[in-house]
Amino acid sequence: MVTFDELMAAARNLSNLTLAHEIAVNANFCIKHEEHPQNSLAGTVKQIVHKAFWDHLESELNEDPPEYEHAIKLFEEIKEILLSFLTPGANRIQNQICEVLDTDLIRQQAEHNAVDIHGLANYIINTMGKLCAPIRDNDIKQLKATENIVELLRQIFHVLDLMKMDVANYTIQSLRPYLRRNLVDYERTKFQEILEETPSALDLTTEWIKESIEDELSSISNESSPSPGADHSSKSSISPTLVLNNGYLKLLQWDYHKTIPETLITDEVRLQELREKLNQLKIIACVSLITNNMVGAAIVNVPDFANQLKRISIPLLEGMSKKTFDLKEALNAIGVQICIKVNESLAERDLPTLNAEMQNNLMGQIASIVEENNPVSSLIDKRIQLFMKNLLALPSFQKCMPTLPGGLSVIQPEMELVGSQFASIVEFNKQVYGPFYANILKKLLFPGAAIGKAEIEAPSN
Image 1 (cartoon, rainbow, N blue to C red):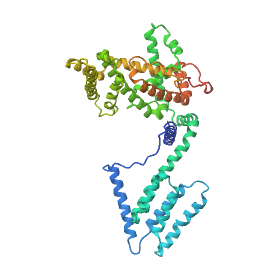
Image 2: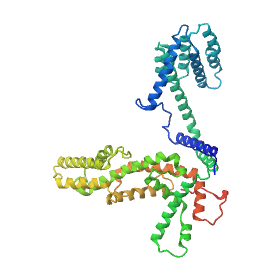
Image 3: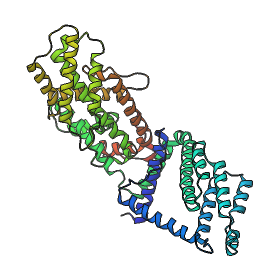
Image 4: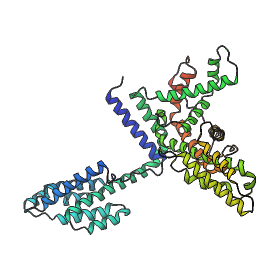
């Protein structure tokens, strides 16, 4: 049993681990300013509440004499935000901000109706101009051109929010090199903390590895006749690296509606994107193979024809991962476009074009790719899996790529890019979680052996 506090501590560790991993491996990661959709409930509520606040402030400032209490609280908040932007040692500007935006002094001035609210706003804008990134210069200019004091204060807070986002993104950029250098140790330490607080934090990972071992045992039993004690001897002869690699390959066909192994959560989105890209590439390779089989003799010597077919298919396959995407309809559209392109190419060389029967046959075969156990789809899928398996088996995928199986040449550049990205994820994952995998593999493959902490080593690639 774990306590609620332990669960919350584990959740915080997982959140920190995921964020650190994303900052380090995703060079494009940054914080973005996002508004709620205009017609959304959250957006409507926010708009109503904000309008009520600023309307109330305006009515207070229009009283005779003006009521400054809410405005003073805003100046106090602005002061704290401006101070948060300062670097250590910026004592002069820090003292100046504290002196000008001294809320006790402003409150005394308010009692005598002597607050120069426009003067304070101008000082704030000028200070923001000194502290902001160049990308905010235009926002500062627009603030200076705003005359209504309530609208001006509202816009000041908007620009301050943007400046806070800029500071956060600058901090992320500064941290990235450090995180990259120390990410393996950091992630392993954080995951160990999660495991200590939540002992079940490796259950899904254990099940994932167990399934891979069972697949290997099934493969071995299919190749040789079973004998007494074969299960134990087979387990002892299984390569831990092969088990892990086959487990990683399963992620390229994973149903991402179910939970991914805990040790791969930080890369779940990237793995899902790679799976979706491979599905798209598989369709393109199938279309190319079917077209070549039917009209290959007539187009075999046409320069760049395979790439033309790929350029036709890619736009029609965009969004394949969406629930609303109709693959059957997309394949029908691809079949029509392929027939047009083939006939154009044949006509340009004064060759007989495809008759209606051949066109219907070609479009029918392309449309049938979506059917379960389609032979062309199954063949291409096996060859893609073989390429990925051979890639993971290489000692260093960055120096060379395995030979591409037949039928995949049309997607070679894309396959090598996806393969490189996948192998990078796998390589880093092994570096971080290798000791945990080694412990699990020892328990599953050698259940009688004692496992000492000092014995655990990461499986090599």
